[in-house]
Amino acid sequence: MLSGIWKPSLRHLHGRLLPLRPRYIFLTTGRLPVKSTSIMSGQQNASSAAGPRGTATSKLKRPSSDLPPPAKKPKTDIAHVRQHLDYGNVPANWLDASAQPSTDQPCLQFTYHKGDMLADAPEDCLLVHACNTQGVWGSGIAKAFKEQYRKAYAAHRIYCTKKHNIANPVRTGTAQLLAPCDDNEQHWIGCLFTSAKYGKNKDKPDQILKNTGRSMQMLLELVSQVDAKVSNIRMCKINSGRFGVPWEKTEEVIKGIALKPHWRTEIEIWEPEEESQAATEMHSEGKQHAQ
Ligand SMILES: Nc1ncnc2c1ncn2[C@@H]1O[C@H](COP(=O)(O)OP(=O)(O)OC[C@H]2O[C@H](OP(=O)(O)O)[C@H](O)[C@@H]2O)[C@@H](O)[C@H]1O
Image (tube, rainbow, N blue to C red; front, side, top):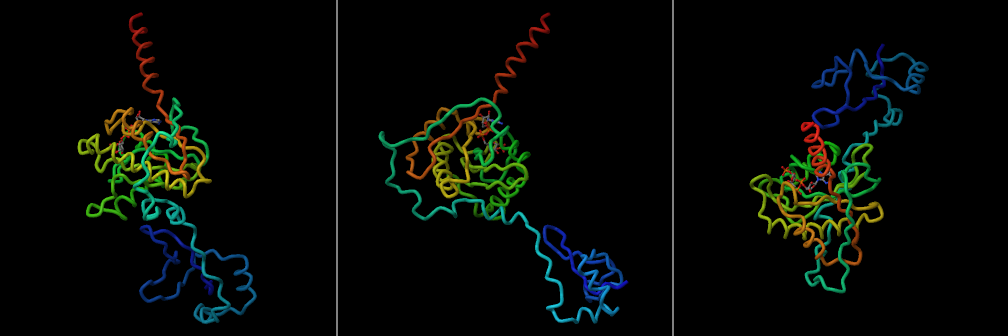
């Protein structure tokens, strides 16, 4: 049976939304299908049954007001991508050069926690880690982020390699605030661009530390823009693993940041228990072998 009213559904093809055409249609000539694979709504079926049996062509010539409304575009990740914030979301004078740390000024308060920072994070928690500007989350906690927050990683990767590129790289000393976009994982992700490259080409420790202070300031500014939506802030001992900077040095830099009145003042610092657990296990294994 010819179905005169053909409501195209949508499907993804190479990342683009295209009408899902019935089989046997000639895309180049626009010939009408002789078989329809589209599933009609109850309303459409009723109107077809009630009306005279006509050709597909005559039905398509009906006034546009009779045609069903165009299929709505399904929600895509773009809606989420728009919520991600970066240096483009801070005002030109966001960092007043005159703001210097002083003794009577509040500094960031750290509370220390043992365990996996990514496990059981409360809803709307912000999870912060240090990143290179290449869009690579290849090892360490970054890899765990990549595995757990695939859509957030995809957005980060696009930001580093499409919005920016080799000729126009993401600047170190900036930050990106990824809005929750992974199903079942309502967490924000804070990316501090503390080194341009990674591996053996990572920035020197002094440069990483300089970048850390600036990127943390930018992150705090970005957080202030979505403040009520972020519950608490969790951060690992950034820079102290693959980037090879002792935590105490990073801690000193971050605590020395001059806080703006509208910035958050509390950050949870999470350290994995694995090292101490591994040490305990090795110890008990050694005992077993000795028995
Ligand atoms: N689940 C967890 N919860 C809590 N703390 C956790 C944890 N897992 C690990 N830690 C700790 O988190 C600290 C940082 O250690 P990391 O080596 O990860 O990061 P980093 O800041 O030194 O360096 C960044 C570059 O490392 C990556 O690797 P690639 O360059 O891609 O190869 C990135 O992509 C960057 O570029 C160390 O104290 C770890 O014990």
